Length: 242
Image (cartoon, rainbow, N blue to C red; front, side, top):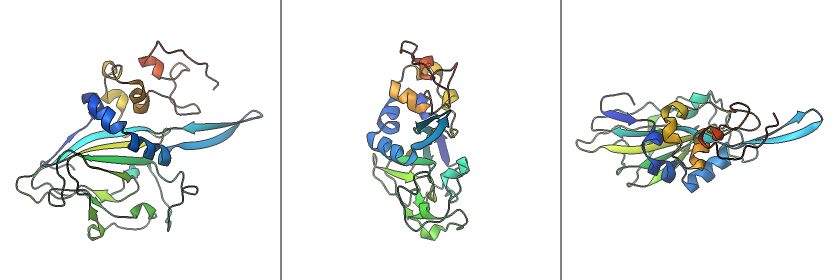
C-alpha cells in the first residue's frame, strides 16, 4: 500500500491508550494469539530437565486508509516477514501444527468496509497451503466486508491484500494489529516507536505485551533481569537462573 490514495499511520500504541486497551489487549484476540503463538519447549540444564513457555508479543500496529482510486495490494502472506516456510496440509491439527504459525492479525473497521471501497481480499483456507503453491489468484478471494467496529482475525499464513477502492467518495479505514511469537523479531520496533515516557504511562500488561518482558527461557533481558523493571522499578525483582 504505497500509492498516493492510501495513507498509513504507524506506531498506534504511542498515539492512543484507548486503542491499546480495546484492540491490542482485546480479550478475544489475546486468547487467539495465546492459542496459536505460544511456544513450549524443554531442554537439559545439566542433569535437570527444564520446560519453558514463550508467550507472544506485539508485532505491529497500523491504521490504513484507502481513498477513492486506491489500488489493490498484491496478494501476500504476512509471515514472509519472519521467513516462515510451510508444508502443504489438508486439514489443521492443533497438536501437529502447534508451531506452524508465526503471527496473527486483528483487523478492526474504523469505517464501513465493502468490496467496492477496498475491503481486504482474502483466500479462504490458504493457511493450509505449502509455500510452493501459487501464485495466489484474486478470483479465488472473498472480501472482508464489515460495519464500523466489526473485526476479523487472520492467521499470517493466509493470502490476503487490501482491495481496490473503486468508489468516488468513500474512504476505507482499518486498524491492523499483529502479534508474533515471543522469540521472533518485531516488524515494528516498539521500543523506538513508543517513547519511554509514553510507555511508562501504559498499564503493566500492555507494557509486557509490547516487549518489556522476557521470552522464556532467556531472551530479552537487561542487566540480567526482566526489562519490565526499566519501566516499573518499584516491582520486586526475582533472581534469574540463566
